[in-house]
Length: 203
Ligand code: ZN
Image (cartoon, rainbow, N blue to C red; front, top):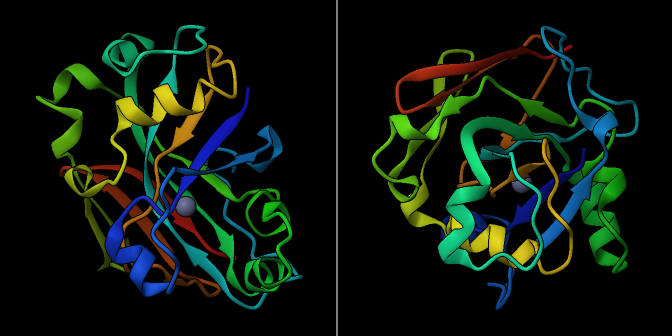
């Protein structure tokens, strides 16, 4: 399986990192080894002093597809979830400055938190989902998928022009504002609507 991630998909987050607003989705990949194993803590890697949490809505692909028309995207997934795209911001800044790929800063072991899955039929629309992240019990990131520049069905259509989507692939759909540094002993809890889908301890 592969993990496909969308960057810069919420205006407020683009502003907080002083990035340019993209004219097309920003796309990068994480390998399967980036998945944080269930019930394991997240270990801050030695090569970074500034790892940030980015809470994101996830989509699990359950049908193979290529060149998917966005009006059919909904047929390619039945479950959604919530996760964290951990980012070594200091390393990413160095790579960005040199115009180099981001993978080392975003795709290291444990950098993809994948919470529990929820049937999408539980929700009226994919485009009005509330979600938030709590750090040590305090809300630090609050998002609603209505504020995405590219909505879930558009993302599926877009990325499938480049990558064949396969059963089990996961899409990270971008983070809202409020990203920030994690330190040892932090606890990160992710909520989709009011349901807690993950709880991660930082080591
Ligand atoms: Zn992200």
